[in-house]
Structure formats: structure tokens, C-alpha cells
Image 1 (spheres, rainbow, N blue to C red):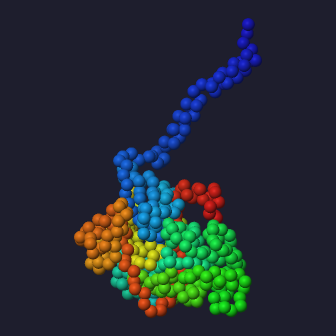
Image 2 (cartoon, rainbow, N blue to C red):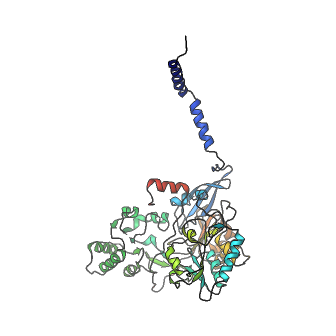
Image 3 (cartoon, rainbow, N blue to C red):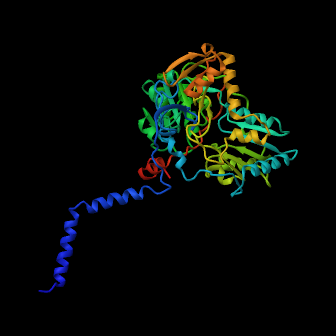
Length: 498
């Protein structure tokens, strides 16, 4: 009896069907998956002792306290510090996943000169030559996006040693007494979506009425007590109409409703671009529940006030000003832009020199006064991850450019010694949630150790005297880079417009 083609098909079909019910295909599938996940460039889970370390987030001006769960020396998860006086135990999505930032593919890996890799020594020599070639009517400027730091002092010292050095920053010496505010009228500010410290805002959300004025129905608008849609660019006109309503003058019905809410919920504040006159009408400056002055702001030049085409060499970290404004201040020919950044996008796309900076968690850094705080603050952000070779912290680079042998950690220690000498304020330690008066800390070294282990210094409130004038605009925070996971979630779930 022969073996026919039909017999072959039956045998093959039966064997295939039977194979499905054996462990072989499933074991093969599992083993293939394991092999595919263990290529040399795939991150491997850390091995080692599990411990908790503390730091302060420097991704944005909120300066939230962070508790890092680490395996060995590798952070594997981040969480907020309970009872932190600024962040109130919360972290935004970017802060929660910041330990994944080293895996981003768009970071600057090495110094670049006009897009080509150079050594750090070559970059220093060429930039120094460009500074020395600055003409009599030209300037060397540093645009500082986070003034008030010890790093800012390094930049000021460098520029003071030049004939035409100009330090530029947006100086806002006011904090918001959010805990005593009873109404906020916001012109496009994402109050419930990352404004100030999210934990602080959520902790007092039930205590204030929120009026959101903006063209689109944003997340903040959907959660506000009142959303007033306006045409794009109509913020100034509507603010003026609300002012009329506050004075009892006839005005637009929507503006009259907003004015009535503000009068019924005092003290009230207005936030967003062009709200200085509205705040004057509300009397919110220098009063509880409004804008209160701090001690920690030094005079600086607004970048927009520089003469057009006057800057020969510009240094900057990543900031929020438009490139068109920056370009208008540069000399017409042979301008040199030096960007001290961790990333290849943003200003780095226009830079003549890119100096790669370590990421948050990769080097010792500091966090200045938390955004919107009514008192000055200072905390340290120690390195929890080893920084890649070829990176250099911006203040370290400027010290090298100036030929100054002082290290950035030495300058931070000097800052801490100054806090101890002044004796003002208190220190909140993250591990035990305790506050200690600075005068009760034994020495500057002990204060340094407390801050390095995880703590924040907060100044005593400044006594408010006399009338004060608010700045015309509220500065915007620079855009944040996201971990690979957050970028993918945002793009695929519609959380962020692209």
C-alpha cells in the first residue's frame, strides 16, 4: 500500500494540530522573546542593595522634593517627599519618570562646533578667542533662565571681568500667597496642569475660585469654576473690560460676571501676560493673598532691552525666549552663540557651539527658590547617576573659560556657609519631615550635610512695607524634555498636541 499525497497532507495537518497542544511552540516563543530583549544595547535591571535617597528636582522652577528608590546606585523609581513645604508630596509626570531621561536619544553626547564634534579644550579655546575679539560697541551676554542660583553668581563674575559683559535674566521678586488667595483669574495659564508646584496648587484648590480666560477648552478650563472663551489675542481687551466692571462701569456681560466673582472672593489675583493693570485694580500687590516680595532677587538686564544687533557672543542655557527675539539682538555678521544644554533640539539647533551638560540626577546641582514661593529657598540636587564622559555642568564650563580654578561644589559650599552666617530661616529635612532653625544647626558643614542628604532651606518672610509695582508680564518656564515612556504616551494618547 503506497503513501499518497493525501496521506502526506493528513499527516502534516495532524502533526501541526498536535504540536499546538504541546509545550514546544510556547516554549520557543518565550525563549525567542527573552533573546530579543537581551541585546547589548537594551538596558538591564540593576542589581544590588535597595535603599532610599533624596534629592530636589531641577527640571523646572517648582523645585519639588524627591524620594528616589535605588537599587545599588541606580534610581529605579521616583516619588514626592511627603509634607514638603513647597511640593506637598506631589510630582508631575515628568518628575516621576525623570530617571529614564538618560535613555533619551536626542541628548547632546559631546561638544559640537557648527555641528562637528570637537574636544572640550578646543571648544574653550575657540570661544575664548571669540570673546576676546569682541568690538568696542559689542557685548558678551549671558541669558540666565533660572536666576538666583550659585551658578548665576558664576555667570555674573565672569561677565564682570569683561569690558562689555551683560548679565540678562527675567527678574521677578514676587511670590504668590496662594494659601490665602480666594480667587484667581487666569489668562491662559495652566493653573491645574503644571503651574507652580502641582502639589501646592492641589492642596489649596478648594479654597479659591478659578476663572479661566482662554480661547480653547483646555484641561484647566474644564476644571475651572468659570471658563470664559475669548478670541485669540483678546486677552488685553477682556482684562480691560474686567477692570471697568471692578470700578462699577458698564461693560461686557461676561466681564461683568468675572468682576462680580472677583469682588465676592477677596483677596484675588490675576495671572498671565498683561495683567499688571488688573492686579493694580484688585490691589493684590504687597498684601496677604496676593503677590509678596522676596529677598533673593538681584538686579538684571531684560534681554529684550538690549540694543538690536549689539551682542557679539551669547551664552545661554535652555530658556523660553523665541529664537527670533534672540536673533534680533545678535550682530549681523560673525555672531557666536554658545548653548550649555543637555539636548540637541531647542536653541542647540541654532548654536555655533553646543556644550553638553549633565542631566538632572547626573551631577551636583542646586534648586533656587521654588516658583511662586513668597520666601527665598535653596536646596541641593546631588548626583545619583554617573554622568557620561564629555559632559560638563554649565557653571563648571564658565569657570574653565574664565581660567578660574574654583570648582562649582566649592561655590555651593560658600553659598551654604553664607546661609549659616546669616542665621535666618529654617531647614526642612526630607527623611524625617522635621524643620530646624538655621541658628540651631551646629556649623556650616552640618548644614551642608543636611542639604546634601535631602533638605530645603526656606527664608523668613520679608516684612511688606510701602507700595510695590508688579512686573508687566509673568515669565514662562522653558519647555520640559520627557522620558522616552512619557513621549510615547503623549504622542499615542493625545495628551499633548504635536
